[in-house]
Length: 313
Ligand code: A3P
Image 1 (cartoon, rainbow, N blue to C red):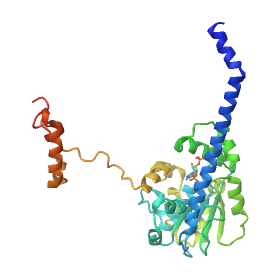
Image 2 (cartoon, rainbow, N blue to C red; image 1 turned 60 degrees about the vertical axis):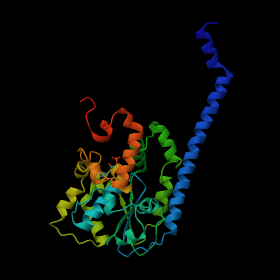
Image 3 (cartoon, rainbow, N blue to C red; image 1 turned 90 degrees about the horizontal axis):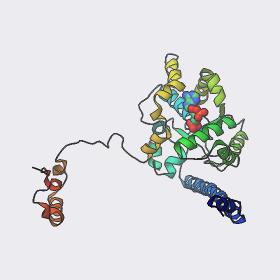
Image 4 (spheres, rainbow, N blue to C red; image 1 turned 180 degrees about the vertical axis):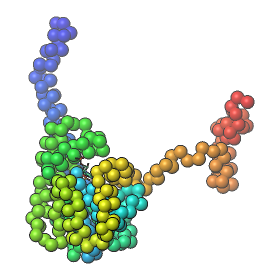
């Protein structure tokens, strides 16, 4: 039997089929488990939120969406209208925090949330069932679900390391096995409340087609005070082109950096000799010298490591 023949035989063998079937089964099971884990984590988040002693203010605004429906755009719109054009933030989430996330990840505690000046703007992906209820305003933004799936697919690839193709993602999306669960259930859960005067429903497509009209409706609904002179500048700042130009203020990656308290532009610090003099106290200095003597002393009294003396004088 030639090597080629034996390989062919193996490929065709029932064992190969069995192993391949088992692997496929395991991979499906793993995917299911990831879905269950995602749901469990979500539940834990929601559980924390439920326990939080959060009392909505009458002028709070909850901007709620299923992801990739224009959330960030609406965060920007609301903040621009509320602040009348202020761009003094590193990330939009600093001025319009992601409610359940800042709480679940301890980015903000109850006092921090309390300290946010009115009108507070909160982004949220919570279902109607879990959103804090009160006399505040809610804006729910919807987008064509198929466009949401495509946008979410690209987000999964660019930000979450998803390696599959669109049809794999679409299958997960249709089964609600993606972050934030089923688009269908999310939208249906909120749409049941059409007619509630505290909830404004907006469509992403309408925002694209008639941004000015939508902004005027939002101003009226939220009671913002925007002069006609300020309006064109706000419109400009809410355009896709403007936001694209300042993308780091909106990118999820920058939000994560901010949430973790990481400092940007701190990696290349000073590039100078001798910073240690101002940092080490006598005890630390002595400790270092003793250990240095023990390990490196045998190579010469003043090694480059200890005193910055040249290795080849
Ligand atoms: P695409 O991926 O289709 O481009 P979310 O903030 O809910 O995650 O939604 C992201 C989607 O909103 C992205 O869609 C993004 O391009 C779009 N978006 C963000 N700002 C926008 C703007 N100013 N105008 C139009 N679309 C915007």
